[in-house]
Length: 176
Image 1 (cartoon, rainbow, N blue to C red):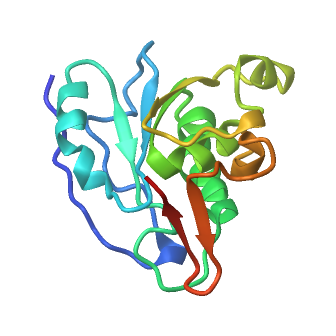
Image 2: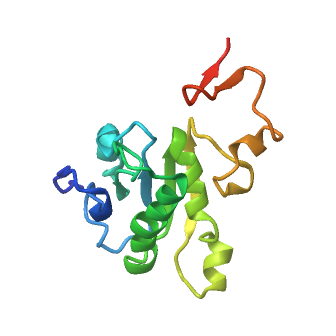
C-alpha cells in the first residue's frame, strides 16, 4: 500500500486544517483511523516516520494544535475544541470511521477531554455508528475524569513537593 504525498503548510490559527493524511481515509476500511495529537512543542512532521509505518495498513492524520507556535493567548479549551471539531468529528461523522487517538505529552489533556462522550456508549446513545475506540498515551499527562482541566486535582489538590511554582517568572521548577 502506498501513501499519498504529504505537504506541510503553515496556516493562520483561525484557518488551520488537517494537513497530514497518509493514504486516503476516504476509502472504506474496517480498521480505525489513528488521530495523532502532537505535544505542545511538537509538530505533525515529528510523526512522519510513524505515519509512514502506519501506512502499511492504517490511515493516520495529525494537525498543529492552536497552542503550538502562537503568541496569542490560547487555552487548553481551545486545543480541546480544535481536536474535537477539526480532528475527531470529520473522521467520525463525515468519513464514518472509528478512531483511536494517539497523544503525546501535553496533548493527553486536550485529547482526553475532546474524546469525552465519543466512546461506544455515548455514540450509540446518539444513534451514531462510529466512535473513539481508545486512546494510546505516550508519555502523556492524564488527568482524573478525562476532562483535561484539573492536573493539580490528580495530585490530590496540591502539586507534589518536588514541583515548585515561581509566581514572579510564571514558571514551574522541578527540584531534584
